[in-house]
Image (cartoon, rainbow, N blue to C red; front, side, top):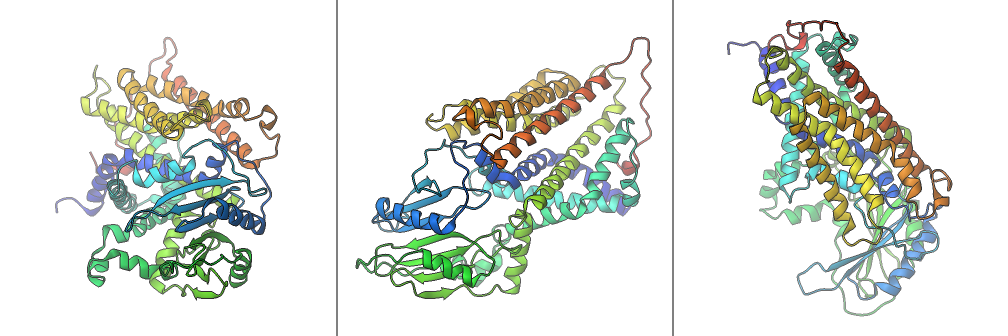
Length: 528
């Protein structure tokens, strides 16, 4: 190998980051929004009331509702409200032909009264969560692509550490208004400042999908039957077949209390009732996933659905499962309280900014070599267009998603799909706009439009509330108020960025622009 290790790693860091950088920017940005997916969903369903939580009352109301509307179902599902999602959700699986899973019916209930809520249909924050690892692609192709991008990201992080031999010294260096130097300093700063977060979030994403991308050991151990593996992974979820003999379902509230005694300081997230109204009915009480850092999908108590007797307690996690669950829990951040969740959010934005600044540095360095050319090469123009659409365009698409939620009629058929369509239409239009407008003008115009849309979200929220008396902070809903304030701050930041770009584009009359420095950047001295 003629080149040294650092030169090879620099090449790998540069080109690996470029080829999948646009996809990684979208994955990290939507994943960062997912840390507040419950709050986003709550804002996108303004008809839902914000009430004080009482799990005992809510569970009793849910059982009565299902006894009236879910008779004859194979399974009942009850999701209890929590501080982040204050709605009571119930679902049931209707019987179907033998061998089929049955049809699900889902309803949202008022946790205080048990009455059915008619809220607008929306994907809410779940759309960003699903998109960031499924990419709106059929299973399993989106997951494969996002996992491949995560592997490239992990390689780029390691190669970046090797390339920057003065990485911590560079962290304390920032030279404002120095063009490419400023972008490089910013790239180094956000890269080093939250480097443990970058490594954790990237490596944990690979661990989460390990059973999909590395299934050889599972297939060998279970002779190709992956379903048997998942049954062993969650033994408490298995249930005996229905007996065909009618029997009343026991009250669920005592089972909830018994589970809370078994998990001191814990909470219950979901109850699954198998064969309600049958002599072989069983009730699985599942612990809340936000109780602990280590995720334990099998943390369940199983009860007899007729007499309430405890049948099974999920065994303690083995060491491999605990390690895997810790990576999953750290990646999702469900255990985080409000302050720690905001820290996750800020670190996620830093990761997104690191990717974005890297793309800008790659393009800017090569544009300097063609500064005297009347027309820049096609490949540089292509990268410029993709940079604009993948960053400013994605921000516009998110804003369009929020606006469509409030502008589409609440009773509009398939409105959730139309919200998603508006996201991709706005994203596609941003790509078209970047193709027909000069690079800097496209940046300024798209950032400016994004500033207007995000800053207008609080006004839109007030004007489109089910009642004008439920406007900004009137009913004391801090979740909705926090969302509005975050959008307002985002709009102000985008306006500042657009203004900075506009001022940088203006050259005073009679002034001679300073020729660009041709000396290569410190971190890329070995890379062309």
